[in-house]
Image 1 (tube, one colour):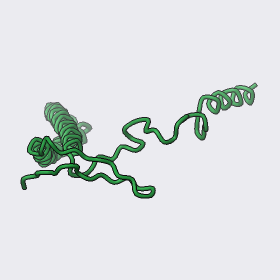
Image 2: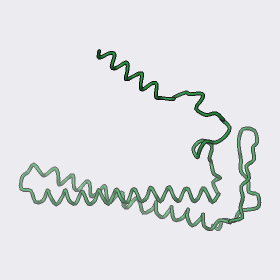
Image 3: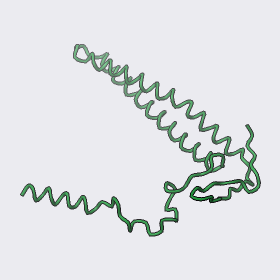
Image 4: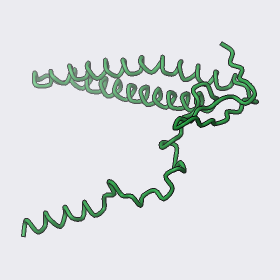
Length: 153
């Protein structure tokens, strides 16, 4: 009975997976999303905006997580100071470690915020008349500007 249940579970898992399904993509040349063949040109406005958005998200995650860890460390440390037993001594060290790790995460988020602002400013300063045209040479697809690009440094 046990082997039957294991076999049925394994069969259901294998039936629901689509590891090497050839019918998954009907048209292999058409891009199905951003992750398959979307590679914006490194000096394009879309690239700078995407980079700014992802860095800003990462910085907010670091800052928020660091703040929560710091507050939790302070609460743990204050509670361990009010205890009279030696068994709670480990909690005071845990609180100090949480505060230190939280502070490090908040401090680390500051340069990431600065870099996100740099990319945002760079995207806003780019020329609006720039149009990138795809050019396929062999298997590689390259992009070249149709009119021009103005990036102030």
